[in-house]
Length: 237
Image (cartoon, rainbow, N blue to C red):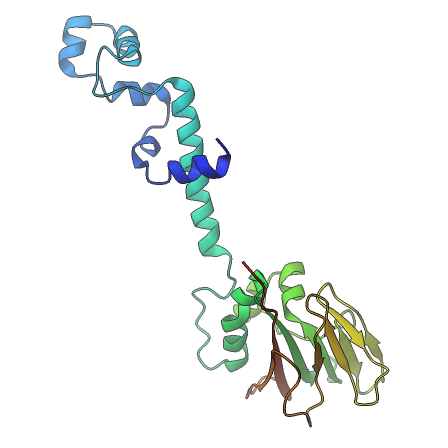
């Protein structure tokens, strides 16, 4: 039986988790009357293990260990599932940009959606910068806990899909695992999704950025401008 099947079969077996050791499990089936007549706990445990005491068919040591391991793995899997979203349980009242990112976090993590974030703002030196961020990629390479907790401000970087410093005129373009950058184009910057090969046109004059894509401008007091381009990849589960 695979680990996954073992976990599923024992997901609801709460009784196993109650016992720290196999001996504790055996002891739970020993009655005061057993001890009165036997006067030996080890002998009583052996009789339970052999099926002469207790109720039902007792688990062998190997079965107990296997079920306890599966129950623990199931518990951890449930714990990790509830903690996978960095935005979970965060109070984002008054922060529409972070709220928009929180609404898209799970879909960008599971691949159903790939969002491109355009940010125009000032860096720590007061220089105006702008750039396009591959949200799904950034989620994989860094913790967004710091952003949703407002300990740090999300900014475009020279390593993102596109970056421009308006003062130094530094300009960079980089492909990501999700998008190819098409910079030498008459109509401006384009991004090509590597999964379905659809083009996303981020020209603000375009009312429709492309097939299966939408453009949403986010009102925010934290940045000069924020726009999110959502591309639905139609991924089959």
